[in-house]
Length: 526
Image (cartoon, rainbow, N blue to C red):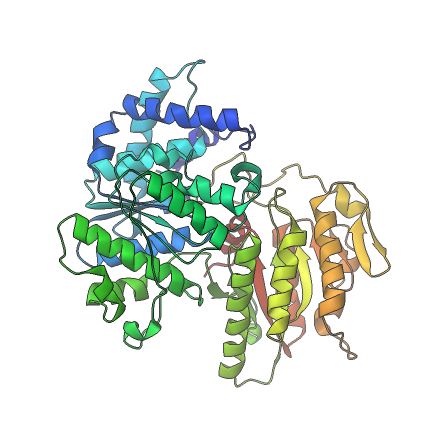
């Protein structure tokens, strides 16, 4: 079975393309082909018959979909959930009744789709790209499994997204909008909102949340053109949970939960399963809503994991706070969650150990750390949380290979570390000489920001002084930051730090990329 699964991963990996996603002609062509692929797989009628909830947005798409699925599953419905990206195993993207699809079913549906597409595709109509294939696979899985409801998360944008072959959803949702993938979706909120509103279908009701005025105006215009009844979902009142907490941590999740409630109740109404007026849900929640909202789970979003690899005396002294934030707005949300979690931890802890906050960061090259760090640092600093150090790591995940939960760490992979070897301090700004290096931007931004925001302590800081890593060619270190040639080395440094300094406790915020979150989970997940 493991060998068969590896063969499927190799086949999937062959669909990864290096062509720029930002090329509009390429994106248009790929989207148009989706309808041909759907015909090849005989999925037109099954998709039209499927009772779909379609969700787009910048932040909170996955969380909203997970909340929605959990609510409807607790009503007894057979649910299908398609989300992206996966963190460890590609099967995470396909959930049946709240569980990742099993390997046996995945392989059965995978090869069914693969063989039929391979037989029909040609130079004129090549095989679909990775996400397009996974979207087709999701539709095949949910159609054959006869799910009562399919909750489909948009991959990127909306209008030209692979999932937008959906023509007759039951209800659509737009989560909070912000700046992300601007090289593809546009540089203004108006352009971004226009892309997201592309999932609206004529006469199909839609819900959104409070949005910036310029974005809301576009959503309303698009809705009016398609005779879509667009309504704004209120943030969930936590008192309606009967003393329980949402299954996903963070104050921002109450916004996502409020949207999920309206999507679920509208789906129930429009499919003839409920007479409950959605407005009534603002004063009392039925039990399936409460159970669904409080038991929903999603890896890598406001997730806290204590590392168990330290020695017995250091158990619990290294804690990872994982959040896949990767836009300026989500960085602020992440910072609020982390700051609150640290404060709550301080209140709970009766030990006398000093806690130090560390940032473990990486982001994709298309994102600008100058936009990310200030939002993160400002928000944390306003709440009295200052990072002792920032650790920067390169990508461990291979963008040319789809992995699984059993995948080992890449060995012998060529990675360009020239930026590390040319790294030099200059005054209080640490940077690398190599022009155009993303790590140059990260290090410069970090040093500038921490010099302004971090209060320097007069006493010796054990977090800064531990280890012999400064002389290691695979690690570059300066006052407030370190650059590691690999993620495992950074994890090793963190573990040795707590083991060599029994008086400290490290709280490590891991953020900037969901790929980084997945890589950390592979290394430290209990």
